[in-house]
Length: 194
Image (cartoon, rainbow, N blue to C red; front, side, top):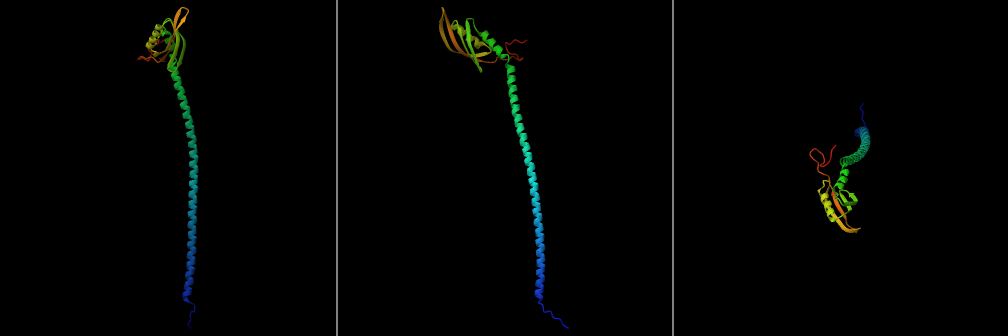
């Protein structure tokens, strides 16, 4: 007996190809979904890792900022201490200057001249006084100019005044204070060492 297949062989082949295509499409979709899931997982892990690194760096930056502030505060303290040390050193260096300054004021005074006021401002000294004559004021200016501790005396005003048969001269002058020259062994010229 002869069998005749009445089914269309093309339809069967089409159906088989559709099933293969569906299976391939499902497999491709599953693989694509797995790849996308793996990629998302990797990206999320990378993002989490980067966030942890950023948080760590922020924490380190905060620590460094705190250290920088501490260093700046220490620098301010250091600058203040250095300034104080310089003031103390300057005071140590000039502690005998006032004694010499006043000693020189007295030693340069000629007889018959009296100081009534002495005002020191920085390196300038204003002197006021009374003299028995204008010549004594002139002598005082020469003495100040020849001193190691003073320079450039400048007479501001001199006024004559009559008082009980005496003719007195009231004067105002300015003179600059200076430090004397030091000798080779570090001693101030004219200073007595003990």
